[in-house]
Length: 193
Image 1 (cartoon, helix red, strand yellow):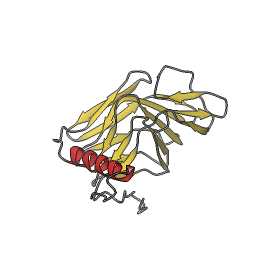
Image 2 (image 1 turned 45 degrees about the vertical axis):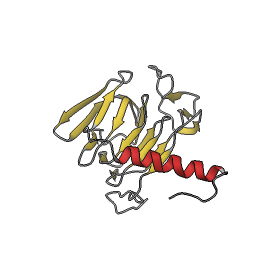
Image 3 (image 1 turned 120 degrees about the vertical axis):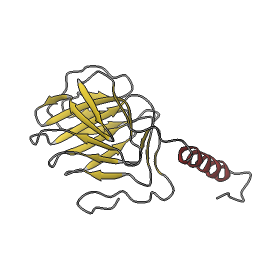
């Protein structure tokens, strides 16, 4: 859809959005691309179209994962194999944009925080099966009550915390986008986003 205001920024934004959506929709399917970056002992095991995510670093009720890449194509699943004692799963992506067009699931009632400063795109087939809340952000780090940070821009093995996050730090974050025909994300409890 093009705007008739050729001299203004609305034309540029509309053209850029249309070009981005066209590029992403016309790309070939390459399967799930979930790769650990090695900073949190995250292990990704792939069996057909299911990527099981285990390991990580657990600190009290918090579980930390770090990925170089995290994208899902249609009919693929990312399954976080967290223990039922985990209340918060903190996941960061240190590489490029995450394109989610499959299912993300967790065990139990854990909240899932998904941090990717490069951007997050939810496709028409994106689904959530998360027992707790799902928080997606393009902030570049989470800041906890005790001052500890879990960042995606310069990831490091840091002393991770048992406290709860109190803030998000934003640098030059990417966008969170719902592609055409992807105006809703469903959870297993029937919640529409």
